[in-house]
Length: 371
Image (tube, rainbow, N blue to C red; front, side, top):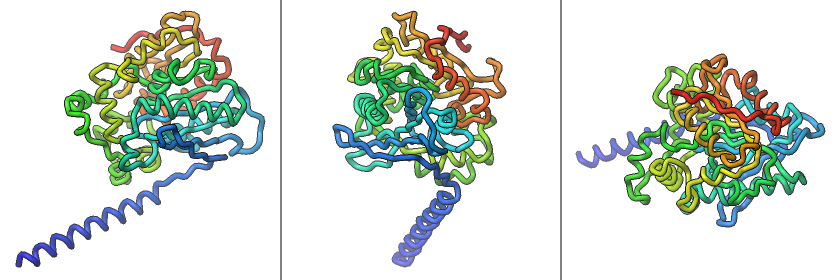
């Protein structure tokens, strides 16, 4: 009798596993949205971790590039598709259509990893190795002395940490920081509770599996996930499902522990040293972008980084542009919809392209902080 029960339970478990596997395979194929690239190259970092550098240039036909090359750097729990999710809602494709030579990097955090590789996924390693070597590779392959940089969320935070440490200012002509907070943890209250755990007990977040598991039903009704990551009303139909299958990656325990520690400090750090103070003497022109209802990088949090940037160099051109209805836009912007919202092609992307055209003409400007 006991043997029969055990066999039945095992059969049910095997059937469940097979059903989940079939479900994932079906919806991954159904919602996959491949994007073409002119080239793709894997680069090995000094510690053995790998990143991938993709070039979009001339995918749409041969033409002369306008301005220096542009490098787009993705955020936490994401890969390079963060800035290139859909051909109609892609900052990368938009800039390419304006004649720019566009490059996208997939950091070590944006690649599936296991075992020792997962333990190598640290914020400090990406700031001191991945970002500078990606910039150096773009400069070497194009012959450009300096590039334009776009950092989305963590991609901007990595620049806060790298600039002046591992990235010389002369390597950058200008920078766009999109939804990149200066204060860590405001949108994730659980981070401080996580920080109370010994580092070795901090769990990783298996977002890739979970996101693909629920992608098919993700647009049926808004959830807590939507409230934190996007403004559900400001994302075109089909793009949340596409993002869950094509964009989302795991957050390894090592990187989750880094951000938990940052939440106690209040900002990101390298070697225990906070990053924002090091931006005081920066002279790189910068455009900061924030969403009015962004739960992960509020206007006030982005403004904190804006204030730190060139704090001792008032002549450095910089501007913070909040996006949302209070600022005259068609809809309020959350976090992810700063990358692929309904109105980004009309409202956000032209601002970035105009800034890149003449970054030194940006008039220093400071918005009124949100309540």
